[in-house]
Length: 238
Image (tube, rainbow, N blue to C red; front, side, top):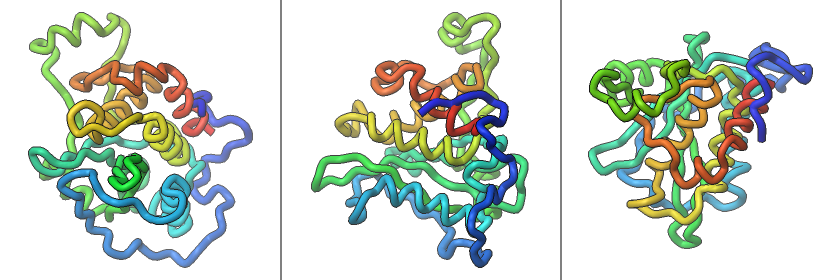
């Protein structure tokens, strides 16, 4: 996977439908998201990665989210359910107020001891409420008190504004690749929290910024280096 450039390329189109087969427009049922208290649940039958991607295609066909290859500005949030709860990534399109939000989550199949991706759709109204109630957050720390971050960040590197310019397909690919390379799950050392940190870090790097408050250099991020940032580029930019 590689994030190519921030400009459309390879014949990509910014049109939301992007020649996708139209289906009856309807909002997904039961849009209210009920996150689990933890990420240890059993996976569905079949290929969970294919199921993960098919959800986004279905939502795009219903026009509940932008077309998967439409180049948009997406806002990124982190959702922590409870004090010791499950961490998820939440994605929303900044330029379209008529579409909802989607989660990108790392789950665990306890029987097979494998991690896999999952996602849920959240209606716009409910998502905006979660943002207003600060259930979805964007880590922002005071630059004056965060001395370590100020020292480590290059002088010419901007602080990330939690927006990424790409396609939904690229974001889906990034989540899938991070989870495929996640390694052995550990609630203490390599959990859903590490997945969200790595996802956020790669989005910030793609925008040539640094994300204040996010732990950098995790096992997956440091091992894969720029390869996943490239994944955002290819998928994101078309």
